[in-house]
Length: 197
Image (tube, rainbow, N blue to C red; front, side, top):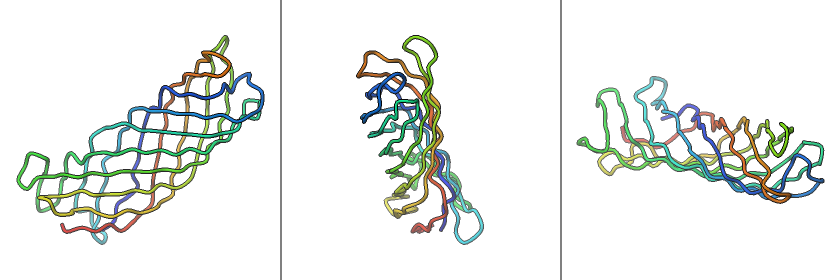
């Protein structure tokens, strides 16, 4: 069985870091938590698509350590984690399976990421600023989707991951910023997962 690329879109908000707009060069730390939406995946057995699995929305947790070059350019290493419950599976020959059907759907998916980001900050006037950036690295994608207690999709794989970042930020002080951004995250590639369907 193969799973196509898994796309994640999230908004990370409320972070702590040293300001990057007018700050001198130096190291900073960042923390973030936000809303995460996992796209429906298409499941394959050999070549034909035999079904799809949808997941509930949940939180995305981020932590970063980076270096600000003092000219708007920043480099950082970022780790992230999100976890989603399986909410609905549509399987050819079985129909729609949910948590309330017999057989019932349970389990879900988790993703742990390690990315290297490059970001550019520019001022918008006053304490306001904006950020554009991108990152690439690795994701560990773990599926533990179950039907009637048995593994329907299972296994963990390391895959290439990337993200695009756009956001706004506000400097509360010389050492504290609040930011809200949108991140399109993709953990792609084909991987073989165990299946009993």
